[in-house]
Image (cartoon, rainbow, N blue to C red):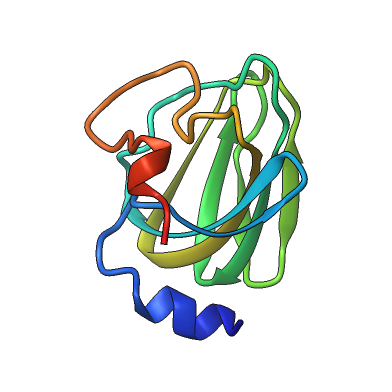
Length: 119
């Protein structure tokens, strides 16, 4: 599988696409641009972010925000309130437990059920 070719099939921002499964986790690709991801947390799951293209502003409650760039990887531990945004188009890989909602404990306009994230 070629990640860049998989990303070409994603037309909408904030619409994760599951490209694989390993044990109890999904491997997802997503494109974002803007500030629509709400503050949220995952009560029982850690979440891995890998930046493939662009830059991602990462905010964690009660901590200083930081910018992730192409090739950067960050793991958010369960229960940590966080949000992400990007001024320009950003491509990223997410590795999340199958039980995790991509917007965590918050349901809003960008929340997609798992069935809508399948290839």
